Image (cartoon, rainbow, N blue to C red):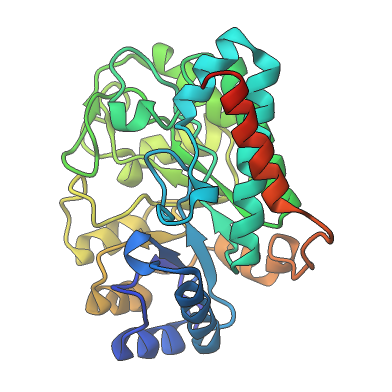
Length: 337
């Protein structure tokens, strides 16, 4: 069975219950966090163990850099927040583009070398005056042209190293001052004013995966967060944004999701959702999702044609990645950044 679920694991090594679940249900993906990575040798062992129990399972990570950094101990992956590059862009476009190229090139190189299949970028949220700091720091600001230019560089470097991009948080997390990890955010912004946020995602609607936002857009659907809103998914994400790839939920263990596992499955099975992302570390919950969340035709088609996105290409030869990092550091130093 290949379950349309992305799960997380508890620690640095697979527990027996996790091994049993992964072997039996073969989840679509496993996403790793800082709690799962203490050193590169340990990471290598963990990745090998996961692949041993389910070779088809994809390895995800959220390595945006800046405040979202799963490798604090590995200095070569420590970079500025995205918003800092936006501020640099306002003064020097070429410099900002070069820095983003180097950041995304270095990051993609290492993630691919360590066995990951996907980095959950680009962040396409548009920052406005009320955007929560936790989100705004991860964006390239309020200008759609800048957002498109800088994220396009990130996407191309993901492709170069055969990493699957994930656009997020569709249809836009920049519209609220609240953090969906902690509460249920909502917005009263009109559909007309939301169009700018939607356009940011439409610019990248050709990519294979998108992650929803756990926000209530009151002017469209006052009853459900976007993740569980038929109106948002069918009218906005699938129609207006015209995203036809795999739609995955944001983490279902976040505080913005108040439903039981039974209700989550019932709602999701009636929506155009392809993948459930759940980072609760609850094996019984994972088993329930695997048994009760139905795979879509779109998901099944992706699995059949997965080689299009998950190719076992060799790493580009003769790359001195340390040289790229030195160039990045020297640029920052020379410009007093």
